[in-house]
Image 1 (cartoon, rainbow, N blue to C red):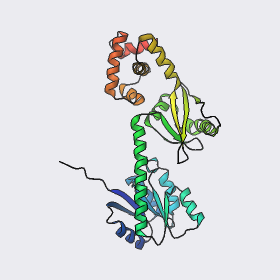
Image 2 (image 1 turned 45 degrees about the vertical axis):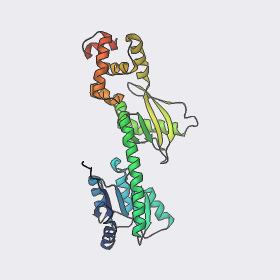
Image 3 (image 1 turned 90 degrees about the vertical axis):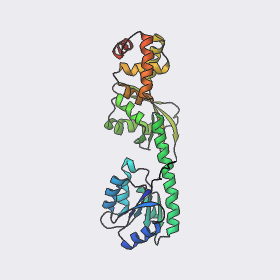
Image 4 (image 1 turned 180 degrees about the vertical axis):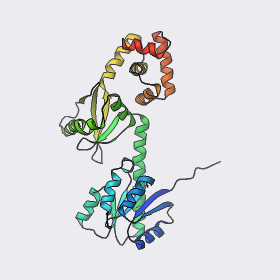
Length: 297
């Protein structure tokens, strides 16, 4: 019987003091962690973006680039958004602490550092980060058209299926950052969010439905293709197709490959093929070109 070896969590320690680095290295040595070290802000940014640590211990005050600026740069990387950053500081005034949280910090601990307290906090934040990341991965796997936006209407994250639908609607990043963000910001601030927001792109009519506000002050929304609902209904009524078969046929008529259809409809390419077999039988055709032609008519 073989067992899978548990992968060690990676901690990046950032401090310009050799004494502090040595003390933290000794304190964490027996905690089943892989320890990386940086002695200034820019070095921390470079390591974080290439290695992607599981947690970062960040000295707040350092020459050149301080910990606050380094944290902001790190947090602007989507791949590091959920990486906990614990600030280590000798200053405990409110403004200093607030600056750390505004930069994207998760927690802070004052110097001189109590190793036992630091380890307890680290493990708690590591566990919370794993839960958040696993939840995000689950959403991506389920294949829902979900996205989260901030107060300004800017997208914080979205499932791959959501970006796929944006692409099919020929919506680019500039439109999302400008017109989309403006409309969504007004929508989430409105008193009646039960009425879905209609979005018209160059070739599609989309709809955003409000789900909830998360604890991170993000707004969870669901995207839908209104036109797809109407078109699939026509195909079902005309050719006696199931809902899934009509959805597959619709995307076939739009020139999409089996792999693209599988992504959009959150199914495997093998399942798409099975639906195609039934579609061909019901339409009395032998290939996807003929099926697409009938759907377009």
